[in-house]
Image 1: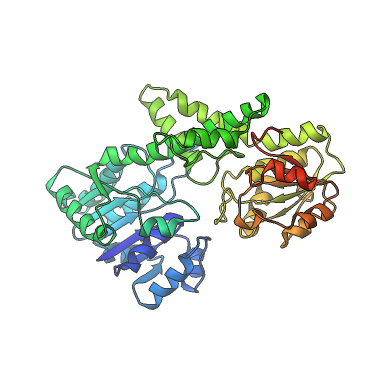
Image 2: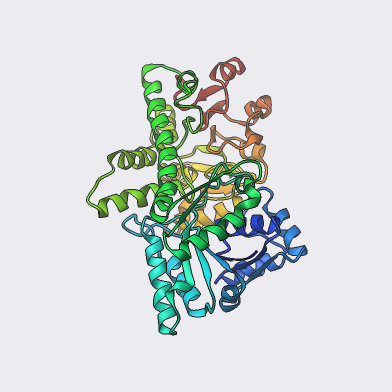
Length: 454
């Protein structure tokens, strides 16, 4: 099938590459010429395991192309995926200007029937806005609105495992309109996703608004589990319990399960923060407060400071003359995504207290340098207190303590003898509970985890 992907960011690139891998002819378009230049020169503007190789393979086979030509992109695909960004607006709602702009471009250039697919994470009612924008453009040109049908097909991709998630999905959610055009669109989507359903049916068909809400509901539920465990972990610290034992005790209940029950420094990234906020905002627009989600947000923001609180408790509020090694900058492993990353809050707070920070991340340092330049744009002196190194052990040289923020596999079994030799003091603040407190005590390392009875 001929497919167009509007937006060559995280979701658009993964969707385009994976659909091309199934034999479809995919045209990816983006308004950013620099991004398209990178892609056409063999690069990939984001880090995602397996994505670069898949893009190379399908470009070579002629099934995947990248361009800034909007008219050509609309002409190409019988199915048009809108996969542009929906950043949070000032009031916490999702900013739909890029989605609507993409819809208008489709309406301005289409000449035959198209299926328009909302792949971006969008609030309930967005399909109606997309349909209205396309209809307005079609009517200006004397064309029938029945030429298009808008479908909601939200993505459920975990950063760091997005290719695997797309190729072997838990579920495929497709929301269609109850019109003749909607039924035709449903059949085209069924055909497109048929290769992913060969083992067993993974697709759930529903109305458009239910599909839109499903995406937000899923992310809100996962975010809620994270904040819930973080609250319990903080309580465990106060009462002398071990959150790891608690996690195993409750996770063994089949009604609860183990997924997303790991405490840490709070969630970040491009999805959970903005989606929880946007869902809460949608509810408020309809006269309803989602009190649980408001609490989830509040808990998560406070949790980003938890390691700083532990450091203050150990060393005091004045950290002038002190140096901290920090392992892990990205908000999670296997990505270079620094959006809403807890490391940014931790670094800013340590610098505010006069400390120096030497950071290491296997992948995210280029993106981190850009983000930290923005974070410290009004404090050039503060920015000088933060440096990065290409070697995790070098970061430890003469540091007063090691702080672990991201649970990269490379951090799970370091040479602890070398760690102790390089650190000025054998102290670890572990924001991801990678190590066992008893093992650290045996080594002579002062260990501060999250809810591990410090």
